Length: 476
Ligand SMILES: NC(=O)c1ccc[n+]([C@@H]2O[C@H](COP(=O)([O-])OP(=O)(O)OC[C@H]3O[C@@H](n4cnc5c(N)ncnc54)[C@H](O)[C@@H]3O)[C@@H](O)[C@H]2O)c1
Image 1 (tube, rainbow, N blue to C red):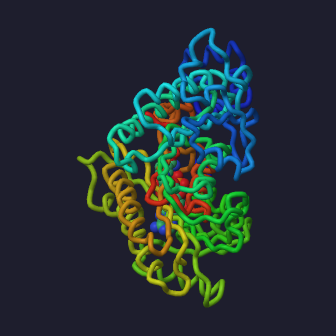
Image 2 (image 1 turned 60 degrees about the vertical axis):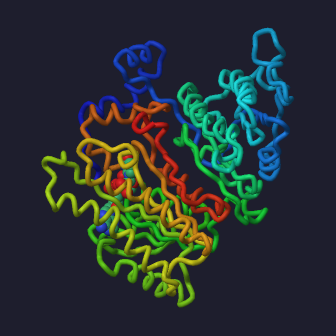
Image 3 (image 1 turned 135 degrees about the horizontal axis):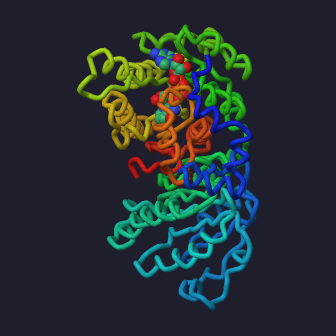
């Protein structure tokens, strides 16, 4: 059933009002009223329109090799010399490609050694920030701070986190900046899925983030595939609507056979989603003690005695918001049971090697939240459950590494769904504008990030929490 809409919101979203708000005069009025029109973000499997500029300090090679693997043509700026100070100041040569709009800048800083080396980053970023196209990309690749034995390079590598977050805040028109930390052993094959995700529109609402790509065995050809889930079974909880339905559709687009799971009360909506994508439906309350057994039994029943799940996406979640002073035992327990306890129980059952359980080499993805990462008034129960998902990812990833099962989570910010439609209008406006992209995300943005994390080509990405929040001010 569609959520009841606020009359003000109905007016604000009519085509006429939107058109007026997008006109020059309307834009200025809207800005004065505090509602600038949101820029339409580039989404989907689309690369930037303009050229991809590759700048590598001290001839670092991993980004160049990865882009070659992805068959992305690059141009190089003239700053590709050890002395970065030859550019950037007025009157100095303009790097080729910067005279016009560029689509993306990939900055390989894996060769970073000294504080002076950081000047290279400034020299390359400065013109790029100015000439980046709408929804353009800056991707910084650096060695993980803890991967250095020496002090100085490790300290500087951490400094890049502040640089990246600031660049992301200064960029305009839907352009984003993200930082990828690699190990010395990380191969271009292992980095490929991440670099491709960040360049493409699939990462539209991921901004100002940093995460790690470790060394892992990844086949050469997988990085090129647009259907990485062909022949693979994936279970998605809470698949009847909202983010869960978008996850089911996105994984199916990428080749997966989806087992959609939701409560019996949402049976009709669930059936409509899975029928559309040729999956199967399992009506199940995931808080039942034997939920994991039932999922495995469904897999065997529908897909044969040898069938295994390739991935489990723990999306189902609820809110029961109350200030702690008013939060009773029931409201506390309901949220912790659905958002956390059920997940722990299902994992335990699905990981014990039984038929219909999770296969070795597979993937688990959970959903945390900016509320969990930063805390949020009125959400003691929810924030506890969502912060615990971060803990679950960190604890489970190393435990499952020997079985080559990756464990990751996304941390959505403000995503426009029926869950957030229940938030009062004004508060909702504030939430959806309070990020570097000045807009709420779409369920598909979360879904695309999950599809990237669970992709077999992302075998080097485990134990990570990737926020899909447009760089929300909350917790940054
Ligand atoms: N929408 C946001 O802005 C946002 C932000 C951060 C995190 N999240 C998280 O993303 C996930 C999806 O959120 P959404 O906005 O799509 O929510 P939603 O309420 O629109 O959908 C949640 C789905 O989960 C199902 N579900 C709830 N309890 C269940 C149970 N016991 N067993 C089986 N299914 C159950 C519901 O029936 C529903 O279909 C949740 O984990 C939520 O906490 C959402």
